[in-house]
Length: 45
Image (cartoon, rainbow, N blue to C red; front, side, top):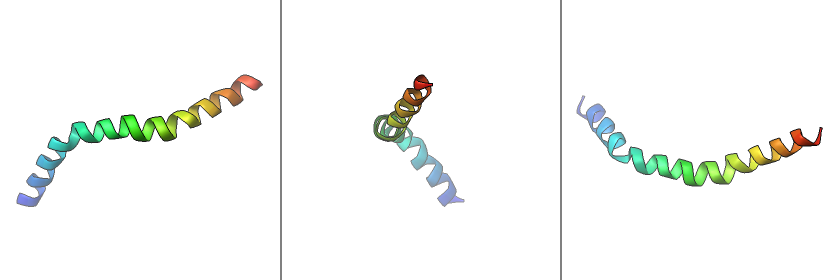
Protein backbone atom coordinates (compact mmCIF):
# COMPACT_ATOMS: atom_id res chain seq x y z
CA UNK A 1 0.00 0.00 0.00
CA UNK A 2 2.85 2.39 0.82
CA UNK A 3 4.45 1.74 -2.59
CA UNK A 4 1.19 2.65 -4.32
CA UNK A 5 0.81 5.87 -2.37
CA UNK A 6 4.48 6.69 -3.00
CA UNK A 7 3.99 6.12 -6.71
CA UNK A 8 1.05 8.49 -6.83
CA UNK A 9 2.98 11.12 -4.86
CA UNK A 10 5.95 10.82 -7.21
CA UNK A 11 3.65 11.09 -10.22
CA UNK A 12 1.97 14.16 -8.77
CA UNK A 13 5.33 15.84 -8.15
CA UNK A 14 6.65 15.02 -11.62
CA UNK A 15 3.47 15.83 -13.52
CA UNK A 16 4.49 19.34 -14.65
CA UNK A 17 8.03 18.37 -15.79
CA UNK A 18 6.64 15.37 -17.68
CA UNK A 19 4.03 17.59 -19.34
CA UNK A 20 6.66 20.12 -20.38
CA UNK A 21 8.92 17.37 -21.77
CA UNK A 22 6.14 15.82 -23.81
CA UNK A 23 4.90 19.17 -25.11
CA UNK A 24 8.28 20.69 -25.96
CA UNK A 25 10.30 17.66 -27.04
CA UNK A 26 8.03 14.84 -28.16
CA UNK A 27 5.26 16.81 -29.85
CA UNK A 28 7.45 19.44 -31.52
CA UNK A 29 10.01 16.97 -32.83
CA UNK A 30 7.84 14.04 -33.83
CA UNK A 31 4.17 14.95 -34.11
CA UNK A 32 4.29 18.42 -35.69
CA UNK A 33 6.54 17.42 -38.64
CA UNK A 34 4.19 14.54 -39.38
CA UNK A 35 1.20 16.85 -39.25
CA UNK A 36 2.92 19.34 -41.54
CA UNK A 37 3.72 16.59 -44.03
CA UNK A 38 0.15 15.28 -43.86
CA UNK A 39 -1.39 18.72 -44.36
CA UNK A 40 0.92 19.45 -47.31
CA UNK A 41 -0.11 16.20 -48.96
CA UNK A 42 -3.77 17.09 -48.48
CA UNK A 43 -3.29 20.53 -50.04
CA UNK A 44 -1.81 19.01 -53.22
CA UNK A 45 -5.04 17.26 -54.18
